[in-house]
Amino acid sequence: MIKMTKILPLFLLLTSLSSFANTSRLKDLVSIKGVRENPLIGYGLVIGLNGTGDGGGEITNTSLKKMFQTLGLNPQKEVTSKNVAAVIVTAKLPAFGRLGQKLDVTVSSIGDASSLAGGTLLVTPLKGGDGQIYALANGPLSIGGLEKGKKMATTGRIPEGGSIEKELELSFNDKRAIRMALHNPDFTTAARVERTINQELGGKYATAADATTIDVIIPSFYEKKVVELIANIENFKVVADVAAKIVINERTGTLVAGGDIVLKKSAVSHGDLVVEIKGSEGSGNKFVHMVEQSTTINDLVKALNALGTKPEDLISIFQALKQNGSLLAEIELI
Image (cartoon, rainbow, N blue to C red; front, side, top):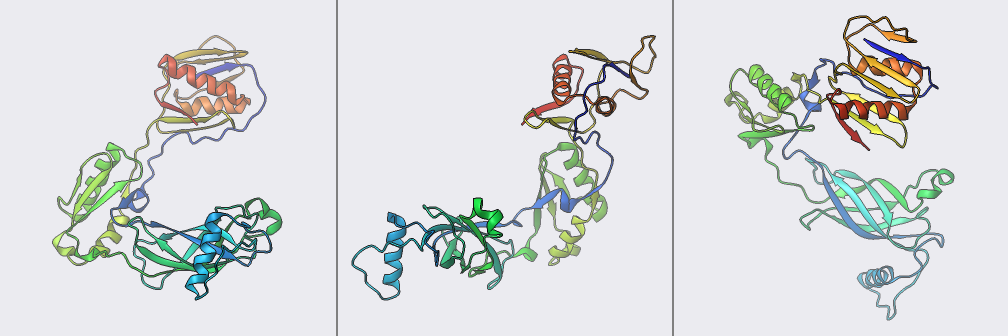
């Protein structure tokens, strides 16, 4: 039972208060080793700017000189132009990217350019973490609506401006085992994933190595059909366990609570607000608001929200309850 006095001004509280036994697809809970995007990066030049480029600088000038030499020209001095900007080009190589496949490219100025609007990226090799070239990028930049995009005019995109030139070698169908990793490590969830996979496949094929890792041996009836196996495993349903946790952003007054958070019997006095949390037994005192439910964080927040409690009051109450040992949950300040 939750009782309180004093109605306070209204505020907005964003909260997810209790974990429901909703099942989730394994596809949404885990990632599979080897199936991920790989970042690519390169250095290039954007030309065709209307006097909004770098206008000089050692890197830009040296790059221009080398570009002309590549084209068969041999300038004796460094070339300076405000119509050129030095940029860093980034993209993501898909897990199973194939030769000729197009990539979206992001271009960002690294010099003194005030805007990349109207510019064109010259052919730029994009390298992976191993130093090898996996894609080439070039084309006209898109900055977006200039009136609204002026503040970010030094960053642009080239939709499908990259082309894959080298593939990653992945013999997926030859695998004898696969390894999955939970996005949110949790021993309970890992054990449930192991149990679900073994029940669905009809044998001991999955093993939870720790709170994150689940190893799966490829059954003989799925040999050379690993893609089909993963497609089936991804759609198995599991109830993911949620840790009792409250995340508080004091700058915005936002509070997000998740998991089965339970309050012990306690009483809190904070300024003009008095909160009393008891069991199901009644009381002879008169209060403005009363909640006839089990004592949970859900009950407390709903009641305080209905009364229009200030965010700073609610944050202080939760911190005090945690310090007192009455709130069994982790509190994280961001």
